[in-house]
Length: 384
Image (cartoon, rainbow, N blue to C red):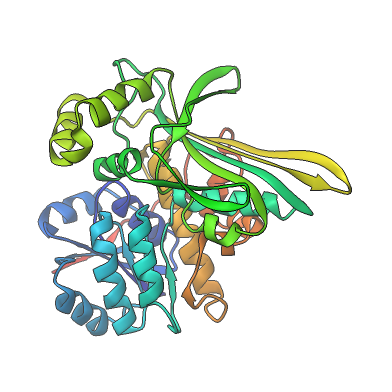
């Protein structure tokens, strides 16, 4: 069994532990600052081998000691982006694989430096966007002799919006504010450019429903840099219900809350509810030349909430945790192939979709209700 340490037992950390632990091939060590509460949550997830332990991710020495003591083979950060670089340093010093969910561009630059020459894999930007969206886009781009335009659109939205923003908090508030407030990158006329967040507003229709899309930060991951010299235009935008962008501009720009993000976080978390009734929208369009003709190819998918061994997961939890777990699985299957800094676009779409975890992206509308087709098994919980 592969031994994996996951730090952070929140909206993504616990489902990730349940997925990996439930397949029978992983022994999961789930670290958190409140192990007693964590143990109660884990006991409700009847899906495999999970060990709950108290670990402070900011105490690098303690994390490194735990990795060595328990022969951990991979470290997953399911924590906010500011924890990514310190934990990547721990992974490098202990020689284990490293995965995270960060959308922060500066963090990934530092991780690339840290991982130079490493024999283990360092895979930031896992999940949905960045993450799966880059894998799907790269696969479409390979179908063209020359790529002109790449459009990437992703949205995680409540199925039944009932507030002025038309939105519910479905994932990290810190990550959401980062997306809305940090610089964005793209490609225009073949060159890398910096774009303003919350600009580039457009309308998009999927299955007869109308959405708006606008620039947000981080969704492209490393795809911009790896596509330079090959693409004339590339951009990433977040999809929301119409009217959302205008109201976020009021908060972020007019009221200057982009300069006071702690206040903005309190406002959003006090006023905007969470929900498990959501939908993830994925849209990729690539236009270019093929056999001397102009072609367009698209990838469109929706992911809905699922049940994992009796525990209801939101669509964004499903898409993010399954995307992460599929890459962990693929790295362990071919460790000799994945070493050093590994970009999302290095993974083959067909292998992700064929993976036991990544299959949720194959057909999110008709995939089985349960994420794991396994017998119900009690958790073997080992607490400290």
